[in-house]
Length: 145
Image (cartoon, rainbow, N blue to C red):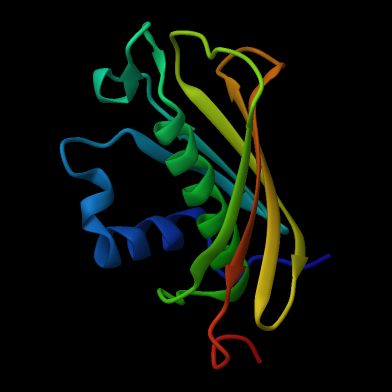
């Protein structure tokens, strides 16, 4: 199985250096783990993620899923900042609870130029998905040997 080339701490340090704006206004996104073709992230329940009706917003879940895919790919290929999203698709399945969200990402295909992944998002402590996302990322041609 494909083993990560970056640890959770390596990816976290890379994001701190290259994307400090991710935590503007306070840290709410956390890398829980990276593994073979996978990553798990957590998004804290916070006022800035709430939409009218008292639920967590779709854009917040979209950001969490996108970040989870990016983290999973970086862990596999190394610190390649210009690995970019080319497609994201979301299915919002149920209203999330008033608690943190957990995103479990699995890379389905890791090629030399494209990566395809899926993300299941659930409320912390719950097993039912609140959102399912799939995404494709473009990997620069000089990134993977």
